[in-house]
Image 1 (cartoon, one colour):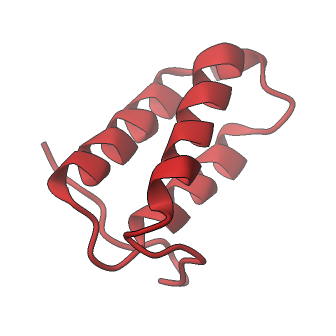
Image 2: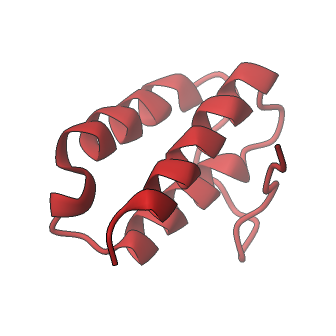
Length: 77
C-alpha cells in the first residue's frame, strides 16, 4: 500500500492531535453520500490530501485516510 504524504500545497489546518474528528467527518460523509455527493471527487480528494499533509500522523490515521482515497477512486465517474 502506498501512502501519499502531501497535498499539492503541503498545508494542513490540522495537527495530529485534532485530526481524528476531521477523519471521522470525512468517513461519515463519504460513507453516507459516496458517489451521490454534491461535491466532486476532486473536492473530496483535495480534502483527504489536505488531511494527509498533517505532520505527525499515526499509521492508523494514515491508513484511514488512504482508505478514503481508495473509496473516492471507486466512485463512478
